[in-house]
Length: 285
Image 1 (cartoon, one colour):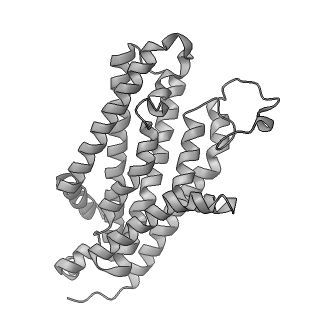
Image 2 (tube, one colour):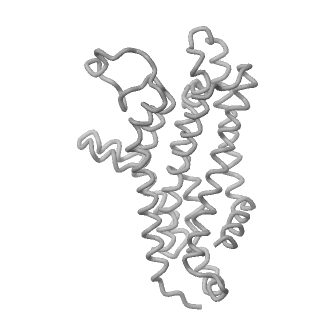
Image 3 (cartoon, rainbow, N blue to C red):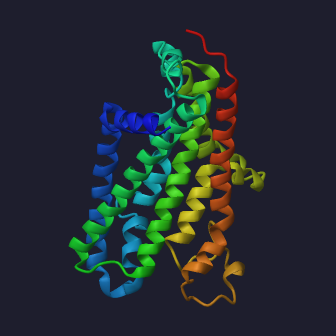
């Protein structure tokens, strides 16, 4: 598995499509963080000092916040890394050649998945370091311990979130064995989960809980806003009797723990199905 892992990791970082996506996300990250930092500097006296760095991720000075952008376009990274992971091997006729070597099937699919997950972790960690570095430059002071922990947990949630789309793209890559079909199917599910589920959920609210996009956005809204206590827009009746004090980190985690475990479960189930299908698939030269 380690041989496949390092080979796939090197292929990801050398591929033009990943480099283009990385450059796009980093440029928009710099743009959004700089705009938020400038707005925070102008209103620094009215902002609680202990949560300034979290505003770099949630402030929407330039139409959308960085967290919103990552929640919408992050799945594209997972889909890009996974839609041809198996179908590409079928198309090139290299899958049977690779498995004729002393490499087991489970080592191959596990190595491909964990290499993609490691690539996502490196990308998300780079964005976090970018935000912290620009924030220190613009604001003149570093984040405190609680802000840093919240941002690290935000990174972990983001990796699980993109990991689901990676696992889904790998599943479609196995089911269809055609690169274009796997990519179109993955993007269709992404658009459905991101756009149409929220529309249908207005009639049946529980439908919204099957969407990874909703799980991610609600987790981020609680994690990066310590004053938040309810998901979505709070009604006036819901806010009655609640003191306007920020929640501690463990209290925020208690609120979003079901979301995190559901995201992790979705990743595990989706990759587990891919694992079973690949182990039973007939592979010919």
